[in-house]
Structures are given as C-alpha cells and as structure tokens.
Image (cartoon, rainbow over all chains, first blue to last red; front, side, top):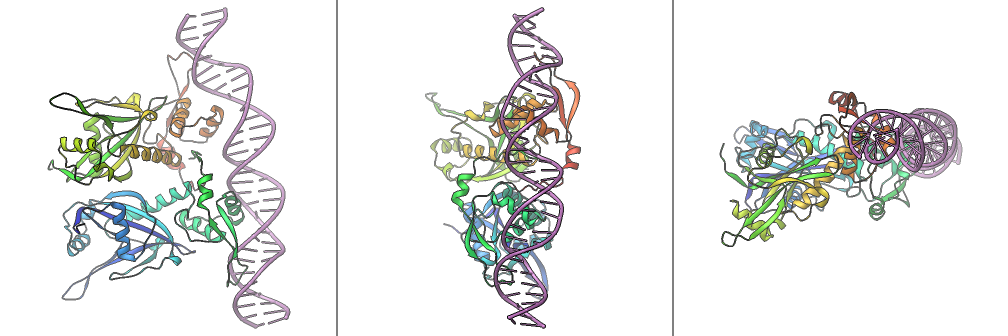
Length: 245
Length: 245
DNA sequence: TAATGAAAGTGTACTTGTTACACTTTTTTT
DNA sequence: AAAAAAAGTGTAACAAGTACACTTTCATTA
C-alpha cells in the first residue's frame, strides 16, 4: 500500500447527528495563519473529507478520512452523490488551503460523498490536531469548497432515505423513546407532528419493539424505551409501491 | 482541450426506454475477434460508458459518451451512483477488452453513473461502428464489467425518483394517454393497477393536462391525450412529507 | 409531605384516501 | 351489420389521516 494521494479523487462525509433536540453535522475548522503576522488567513469550516490514496477503495477511504479527523469508527456510510465543483478551483481560500496541505490547486477533483446519521450523545468525537465538532445544521453557512451544496444534497438524500426505509435501521441509538423518535422525524423534515397521530402511525411499524425498560432520573413521567428489530423489518419490508406525488 | 483519457474515471449511462409495452435499456455489444481465426473472443453487452477526458466535466462526459455510442443528444441525465468494482479487474474478458481499447486493465476505475428514461419510439438510435440498441430489461443478464449491478441500482433509483416526483417531468413523450401512463408505472414497478383506481389517483395530479386531441387510426375507442405541465407541477410541489415506510 | 411542573400516555369523531369490482362507448376491421 | 378491442366511467366498504384535551407519573421545591 502506497501512501500517495490520488490527485483527482476525494471523499467527503456528511455525518448528521441527532441530540434529541436538533439536527447537527460534523464540521472541521480550516485555520491557516500567516507565519509572520500570526493573522488568520483562512478560518472557516468544511465537511470531513480528503483525497483518497491511489490504491484505496472509496468506502475504505471515506471511513479512514472520517476516522482520521474524528476518531469515529464502524460508522455506516451511505453513498449519495459525486460532486465535481469547477468553482472549487476559483476560491482563493480553497486554493491556498490545497497548496498548504500538499495538493495541487490546479487539479480537477471529483468527490464521492457519503452520509450517515448518528446519535450525538453516543458518539463522542476525538479531536486530534484539527478543531472538529457538531454544529447545528440550521446555523451552517458558507462552508469551504462546494460543501454547502453537498450538505444540502445530503439532507435531501437523508429525507428520501428516511421515508423509504425506517430511520435508525442502520443509524440510531440502541434504545429510544417515542418522543425522541418523533423529534427526530421533526428535525429531519423540519415540521411538527401531533403526538397521538404519530404514535398511531408508528404503532403499525411492527419492527419497533417496546421494552419493559423506562427512562430513569427524569423529572416527569418516565417514557418507555423501544428498539428497532432489524429481523422483523426484513420480514415486513415486501414492497412499498405507493407511487405518491 | 486534450484528448487524453483519464485512467481512473469513467462514466456509465443507464438509458431506460419505454415502448408502451415494457421497459428497455440501451446496451452496446462488445465483440472482439481473434485476428487469425476470426473466432469471437468476447461477445457480450455493456451499458453505454467510457473513460472521461482528463479535463472534461463528468456530466459533459456522460453526454458525450452517450452521443458517441448512440447519437442521442439533449438527454436529461440523473446521477445516481458511483461504482468502483474490484471484480472488474478480475474478469479476463474485461481485461482483454480494456487493453484492446487503449486502457490499462491494471488501473482501478471508478465510474460515475447516470440514468434517464425515454420514450423508445421518439428516440431513434444511430448506430455507428458498434452494435447498439434497446433490450428489454427483464431479459438482461450477465453484462460486462459490473454493469449488471449498476443496472439493478439504476432501476431502484428510477423507482425512488418516480414515487417522489412525477415521471415524465424531464423524461416522457410529449403527449400520452392515461393507459400508456398506467403501463409505464406498471413496468417500472412490475405490478398491475386497477384502471379506475389509477385514474382516480392521477385525477388529483393537476399538472396532468387533458388535451382536446385524441388518438387516431387505432381500431378501438381512441384515447384522449394528456401532457405534463411543468409550470403547474412547480406550483403544486410544496412538501410531500409522508414519511411512509 | 403536599403542591407544582414537566413530559408521557391515551380515544374519538370526522374527513379523506384506498380498494374491489362490471358495464357502456367508440372506433376499426371483417 | 357484427365483432373485436381498448377507453372510459361510479359506488360501496374499508383503511388511513386529521384535529383535538385530559390524566398519569415522576422529580423538584416550598
């Protein structure tokens, strides 16, 4: 295995995180200081991404890059888009960053993009050399490269995915309450649901299994925990061909 | 613009075609004959694809490759997947084909894939040097490279797309009858619908506009033609957040 | 220890959408 | 003029979606 980076191919990961309140995404800060004045020449954010190695598989690269930047491991990643941003070559910040990190700013780069959805609370991020963390999706503006468009695209893909297969299937906390599940749908679609109607709806999802366990230490009536049953889901999923619109 | 092919990046187009009876896909025959014996060393099919040029944009490349092979032009293409097939390197047929067409069979290739859906009848294919044509999707087996998987993936993406926005929006014949539209949904999802219920459903789609024009020369009651109104659709489409499953 | 605050949990009436189902109409062909 | 072929149309029963308010159960605090 060589460690030579491929000049034209990169991967980007859009890692969404749910904290039971809002939808977040992992961003990495790009900071570049003038060695003389100490002034910050670049200071903004990007998604977790980097070039792949010349002999590395795409998904392996995505997992490696994500792990390098965040310490996250064993994350389910879903490929959703491959971007090629001509504008990327035009931003002076991006050009400067590329040359300072050993890449050629003149090279065209295509980026194969993956997304995931995690529970923030259960996935602590290990920060190494670069500043990295969860940021509320609703506050994100002006990412480096073409990452703002990639993020928008990722959110749309997440919405499509969620309405075609049960969220959390690959991606959710071990156990959760129905209010938490409702909140998750609400933040992903940016709407509000009626509690009783929501529960009526999920009651039909036989792969949501109620546990005998309840919340503890909350200063209100403790909620029942549920888990997803992958097994039941696989049985259930037959066809869902409600060609809506 | 150089004409040097990028060794690691290709594009593939999955062009679906509806002929009012079944779903078809454009395939290209790969034939390679032994120069001495004349025996066919390779004889199978692939999707329309090729390597991109080093300084060519992905979507431009997809359109160029498609045009080169089929003569089709001004086709709406939707990117749906980027494949990287390690197995590709292992098929002797594929290796032979690559070396005979000026590529290096040792190089890893990632392929950015696009699909489209056309009306076969309105889109005649110009065959140039290679044998190319419409083939019923249900008969397709054993394509070259990893194209069988790409085709399966494309069909799934088409299904997802169709149930999230009206088919034909970018992709359908100018005018069509309701029976033709029903047949289209039936072949894409491989199911049958009840005629009256189907019509009740599409009656709600305000962007399907009935014309005063009818079929001619058919030996039965002539059907009314409809068109899609993109304008009405854009107004209608608000949000469709029926997080089914 | 009683009162308060906070979220969990529960049912019903109304409206809307989905399903199953069969005959008449309009055209061409023979 | 009759036959063949697909278009076009309505209704009743059932399922799903919507709007809406009170009781329960825990921790906290007075």
